[in-house]
Image (cartoon, rainbow, N blue to C red):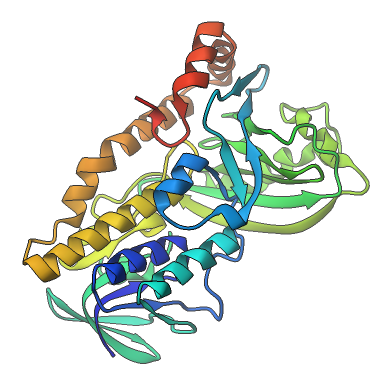
Length: 373
């Protein structure tokens, strides 16, 4: 089983990398450990429409809802921001993942389901074997296998500096107060290091969850965040009291770990990491679909140039030149919020209600690139 490129991981980012490689003429294999591709909806699946377009992955048949703004809640303050142009999309992540893999196969990539990459062997800096039931040989390995990347561990990539541990439920049978706005909750005492969210899917369904960078705090934070079911007026998450409805039922729930920023290295010789495996996520929100897909495109282009034009494989250098500064800005914003006491968070949210600030964010704010130029 000889290939030019082996992509480990068959979800949206792995599909994006494989599609870019295959359409540039590279013989490409996708190794997926499960019987089905995708993340099985273990994702909030909320992204700007401009960001979804940038992925190049078909998404319109996966749209569930469109959102035009957010309500930001600190412990004692609330502010609403509505975007003047761009809208965000709530979508079916499983469908989106399947679309990405279908696109890669359309361009010529070969998909191997139920093929878990269990071991890697380096014959040289530029030749690898991956054992996944069969032995796959390649000059390039692309790890798109998530935050717990076996590819990254096998090739001794540096670990992540910060990880958010999250829990989410999709709840239906409730009366959603607004279907065109998401709710964001910040509270450095109850959910330190990250935030809480409530994303509307339709008039009766929401995706609600939280994250914290303190693994030891996760169980306590979960109990507090979902305490609306007992005493909705007793905490800063009281706007979630509509979930107390007797008709409410949980469709799904899951735990997830999200890297909050890239590894110190995302390329070692001819082994490349993309998406969550690389940590190409926004430290502010944990979203990685856009920057992971953009990285996948760069990976495919640089690999093709390396193969066919004998250019040096400089995926990491090119990716950092394009996007590292943007993700660094997200990291600095996250550090500022994390270092602030709750009283300062109240102050920040009060500023968002100040007309000049609110108008500027409405006109120029961008959930991926911070500000549109």
